[in-house]
Amino acid sequence: MSYTDAQLWVIILALGVGTFLIRFSFLGVLGNRELPPWLLRHLRYTAVGILPAMVTPLVLWPEATGGTLDPVRMAAAAVGLGVGLWTKNAIWAIVAGMGSFWALGALLG
Image (tube, rainbow, N blue to C red; front, side, top):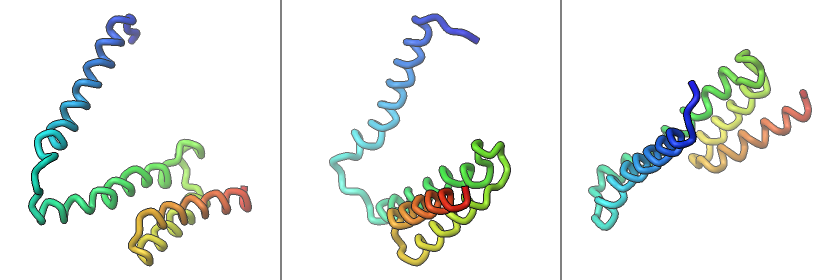
């Protein structure tokens, strides 16, 4: 399906307005208020929930390999998971996973 230039700009503007309203609904309305402790406790786990959801498809069904399992990606994911469990730090887990992915990719090709 092809869109005219005007239709494409309307779609882009509508998506921009929608994104703004979604963010404003949380940040604009609650931005200056003190949030309850139970909500703050749950918000701490946002990164822990989102990062695995972003990484899992790239590890299990990588487009670069045609959807077949890749030992380098599996090993890097295991290293990242191990470092994350050991240090309880998402940044160190990401750094260790990416570092091992690049190192193993260079060694094993």
